[in-house]
Length: 99
Image (tube, rainbow, N blue to C red; front, side, top):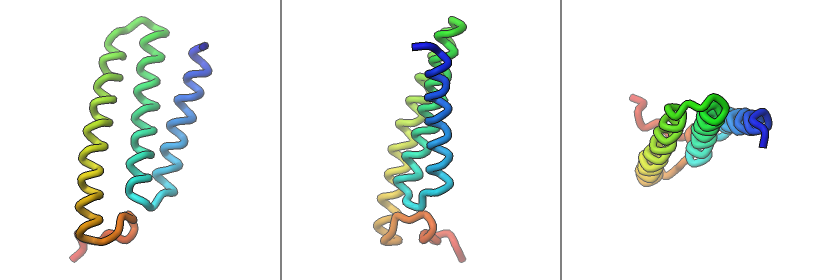
């Protein structure tokens, strides 16, 4: 596949992630949107590594994949804790830090 079409795919993933962050109220939906943004960044690193032949970009892509896995684990732990204490997973309804 040509690099331009894959860059367009990466751009679409990034835009979907931003749209998801701006419109979702559910905490799991927010985590999925962040995952889309991180995957778009990793795809960009791999594409530019392929286009210019830099191996360092692939190392950054692996770092992003590891970061996304850690973010998913910590985020789900926070969501489980919030759902037990606040009885909701909607980001708008959680006000545990107020007052």
